[in-house]
Length: 73
Image (cartoon, rainbow, N blue to C red):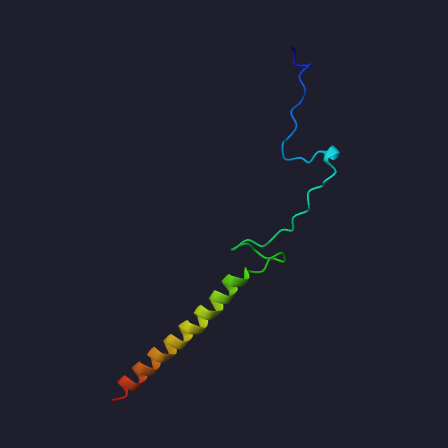
């Protein structure tokens, strides 16, 4: 058998037109850590960053208050 006589292999994932059933289109879901479509941070990262900034400022303010009260004596 020569190379001209061998049929080309078909990819197994392509739906055959004879089956009558087209595959449903998948909608793309956001993956964790992936940018949202318009270039913004992922929602979870933005939320954690906001919480860490607020918690960091509260901790820094508390330590500042302790040093101010301790140094006034």
